[in-house]
Length: 465
Image (tube, rainbow, N blue to C red):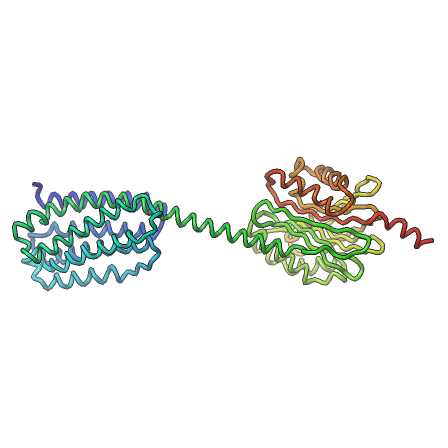
């Protein structure tokens, strides 16, 4: 048979190779607690094996207890790795405690002359810790890993072997023929080498599967959080249509994902209605959070003092947040006087509001301001138009343009689509959002429509007479 020194050197070299492979392939890609503890176990096993090379020399007095402590610490690290698979805590003292105990006992057991100093405690702790790690894998979810049973059998066999060494040590001693033949250093080193190699590759596979499962669970939680956020966001949109005699109002938001960076809102005012449609730069959760902030600021501002005052209040409230997040918001905010049909609007870089006249003509609401957050606070300019009986006011987000050809000319096509629908605001909105539901749309699609009742023409003529 090969001598003990050659086998120990071979075990140390192979353990080093396994450590390098595991550290630079598995741990580097997963950074999991499981991978960390297995890397630690390999380093400790390697250190303990190399320490035993000093047996038979003057250094045996310190090297033998040190080797015992490192091997036990390695077995405890295997236990910690297995505990981490079940997301159980893996405190460092469960590694240091057994290692310190066996090192202390070995140091007082004549290590200078006894190469089996602390042998019974060393064998009992090593076998027991490996058995504990095997138990952790046994109680894992059966569907966790394809390598679960090979790992159980391999690590279990190693634990049972070390407990067998412990029993043989107590029964016949380390110099007996039974112990030397079946549990001596050469056979133990060969068995440990073979099983350690199998366990390392099984551990690598298990580590990858564990990481994939954690990432899948995290992705599922993220999806659920997005869905919950989308539900909250939808409930923050207007849930009822304002009661405004002579007018028909509707709106809809079709997000491209779970949450939207667009929003629309309306509020009844003493003289009519305030309407807002906003589009935050970007998409996703960040844009949705900024949209909620802008909406809350609009709700806090009193609409009775006019669009210019409202936008000044909102600008001062949200500008620091927009600057901090390097974001901006395009927005169209208007107030409608129900009696006269006059619309006073502030367009902050939006440019997607159009009045579809009953005679077929189109009046685009001009954009006279920069987007919110573009260059700090600004003085807000307003524009004025009228909504006459039979006219339709249509406000869109830029996602509507992508439903056509993506150009600004697409606004005219959207206006034609809405004006050509049945003469209700709801049908005007549906004629556009229906296009979004027919295929994948890259951006959020938001539409608000306000139609003035054409019957109001006769009523107004009668009033003037």
